[in-house]
Image (cartoon, rainbow, N blue to C red; front, side, top):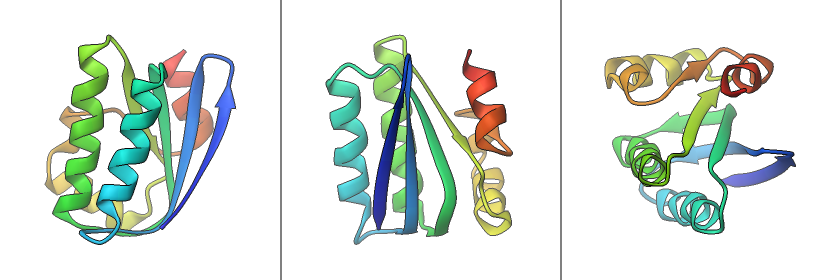
Length: 111
């Protein structure tokens, strides 16, 4: 799992590349929670490079969304490949957090 970050004035964009499963979810969860605990209140998660997500990986986004709600923050995801988008849809994640087709739309959606 590769994690990269880009800080923009009032939010941070985090890109994930690889597989988000039982072996990588703790790393990603710790990374996201560290951002939130460090004061970030708006996260844009770019999943263009995500090849696979398991139910444990989905839990990571639930945890981050819950933590951000507690501090009046927001998390959005964007650029999901079709198989990943199908998993998010089946799991009902469109009701948990906003899902955007691309990064530009996501950034415009949070402003």
